[in-house]
Length: 120
Length: 246
Image (tube, rainbow over all chains, first blue to last red; front, side, top):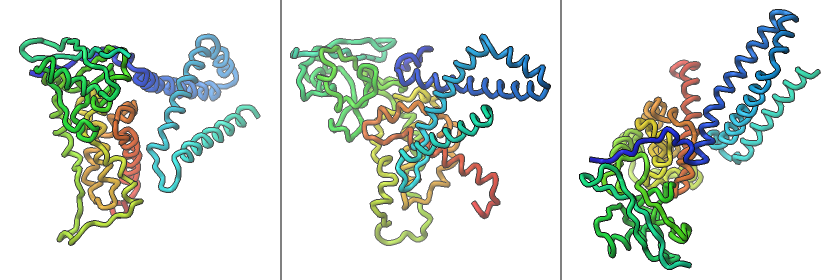
């Protein structure tokens, strides 16, 4: 006759670490949104200048706000993911901090490449 | 400094109460006293019916895990003065059925433990005479994961285990890695199906609280993420390479 404590619906508010974890899980929804948004952008470009400009006009107001929120969540997702990398990738004779720094450098490099394509 | 501190201890007496109730005890507040010393004082001088597990009182046996002020800790290594002026709320470990007072039922873990085959697996036939040799460097590869004392603090801290009791859990996976990474072991393939299953490493969503709670620095969260990479690499190899080349 043991007692099993029921789990509260709001268990994730009990500790800061649980709350941050739930935010990270939630971030996947925003990652998915960015994928959808990118596909919509590609489709608009493929449909000609008029569709592209309609898409840009639509991407203001609430869509812009949504994208800013999504960006914050994607950054949270990326940073927590990179910080985990040295614990998952244990390379003999390579200090964990090197694995971490290489990830951030790769991110920076790819971001610069994308920025060059967009802004040139 | 006040000379007493109040312990609010969860009492559950099957047949007497339908669910745990808190009972307060004033115990001496001494700088060398851990929560466990406070409980022993209650047991010896105030209320002999209080039930809890303990043995070594030096963080080796892993018996005295409890929830103190909401966090899973070893009660022998958690000092009363750190909670002064109190009160100190002492509850059983979370995520396990409570047998009585602070005693929990860990049958679930004991059933999962052998499924990861936590022993050296070798193919030698017959067994060689003498020891299998190992360098200090090879020992370092797994030593951290061998420090586990099965205290169950990691299971108590893990919300995934709370929501999905089928999850193999942090300590069992860390122990599997303790053998997988041992240069003398040849059983990684035997452990793969259990570890790579949906209830194995993939159930973990990396909350990381198991490693925070661990009193021995085992880092079960790290062990799990590391095996995820191993399992993923294996899956890709299985898909791409012909059978002989794996």
